[in-house]
Each structure stands twice: as structure tokens, then as C-alpha cells.
Amino acid sequence: MSAPQFRFVTLPSALRGTPAGWAREMLDDGEIALLASEGLEPINELAHELGQSAITVVRSEPTPAEQDQAVIEHARSMPLIWVAGEFSEQAQTWARARGPMTLLVQTSEPLSDAERRRIDRFVASLEPQSE
Image (tube, rainbow, N blue to C red; front, top):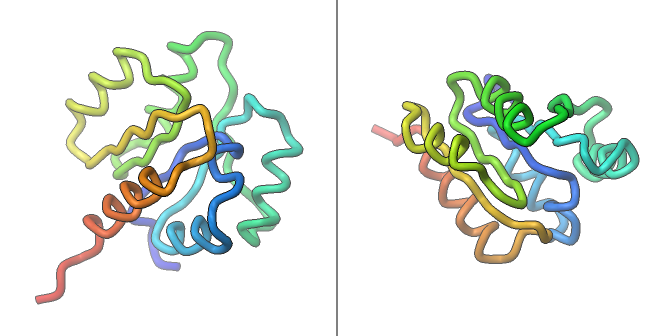
């Protein structure tokens, strides 16, 4: 893979039960970082499913505001897909105001078909247009 086109931040459980290969294919042009609040075992299981020997983890923070800030710092200037159970007003305001494209997907469940299609459209919109 060349330089990643986007970052994808999520809890491991959001990818549980997705069609075989969907996450791996979606991440062909991106990089994943997992939120650690579910513990090490789900992170390890997902790393195996994705065929990765190492995986990035966003550090845990003591407050929701500080956790949001950790994800914001991780995003840097890259387009971002952020999957979480809920988004604070701070995170929503940041996502609307930043220059790089940002997709917030709010779910406490594994990603639904509609949410995966939404992510696929977002990723497709980042692909360079042929001349």
C-alpha cells in the first residue's frame, strides 16, 4: 500500500459480523486505529481478521472530552472515518469545521449494511479522479 488516503477509528466491535473481507478491502487505501475501551482481546481478534501482525491503538483517556481529543490528534490532517457510540458537540463541531473530509458514524452496534455503504461511498469519494 502507498501512503494511506484516510484514517479509520473505531471500536473493534463495530466490525464484528461484517461480511468477510469487507474491512480488509475498505482499508486497502486507509489505515485503522482501534479504540481500546473494549480491551486487548477484541483488538487482537480483529488484527487476526485483518491479517495484520501489528495494529494502532488510540490511547484511552479518563474523560469523554479527553478521548475525543486523542482521536482528533490522531486524525491530524488526514480524512477521517470515526465510528463511535455517540459524538460530543465538541467532536461534531470539529468534524464540520475541519478542512479534510470527515465521516462520523454513530452506532453502538456492529456496522449495518447502510452504514457500510455510507463508508464505502466516503472512501470512493477520496479516490483520485482519472483524467
